[in-house]
Length: 79
Image (cartoon, rainbow, N blue to C red; front, top):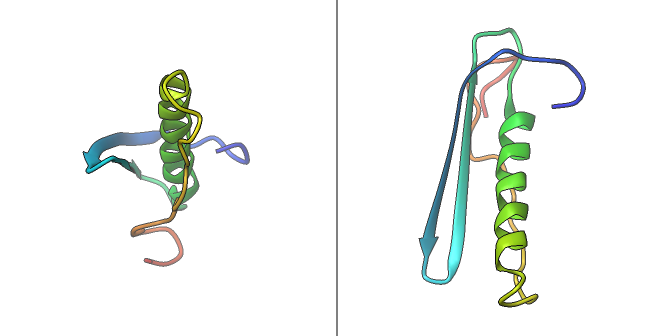
């Protein structure tokens, strides 16, 4: 996100509640020779920080955990 500018074609953030847990998925797409997994991870992380900021007035016991890459296609290799 900070090392080189990319013209993103699509960014979609999905936030859903499962029991008492907010599950965040961020999908980024680009027509370029590089992957955008860092942009997707950054988007999901910023969404989690935003949720924390909104609910901290109710409880400071909120935890952000488990940020990981679900899948990646394109760029140098698929994951």
